Image (tube, rainbow, N blue to C red; front, side, top):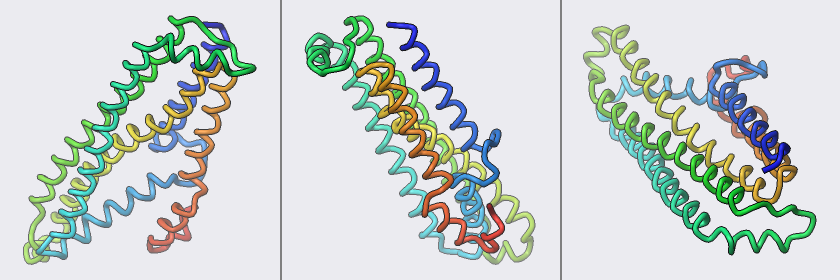
Length: 236
């Protein structure tokens, strides 16, 4: 491990922290809303619209889909952790592949194992995020069952909408943890550059963050989601 390796790791962690904070809305570097923030508006609209439906089969199917997707990525994270430990167990053989690559400095076995362990930590972090998100989506489904029927909603519309907003907020929290776990998986691709050297690590980290930033702030998906909002042209 060299000084440059530590600087590259600090760069990776700093980019991760800043990007996660900006996308979640804790503080802003851009004047425009992220795709995640705009989707949160749609989640609240979804819950309020569900008040007009007595048969909420569509809503429960959507929630089931959210839970199934979260469970899939949680399982994937477990398999990835196992792969990282297998990589650590075959460190000598894996290192021999990198030694044959030109213009790349090969490190010690201990450094290689530490990098593989760091990769396992990233997938472990994503697993905990997906696991908690799955649990929150489960709670969200239970709370969704407390929404009043349309006839009761008409008698006290204000109370029904307040309840729907609270349920939507729990859905948003669950989605936030899911997105954080998914972001960790994306960033693990940038982390793989560290096995090729600190300069490659910095380059792959910057490349992954550029892709994530584009998807959140400059993608066609964001434009479409904003256009689906009433008065969406007012959102920058």
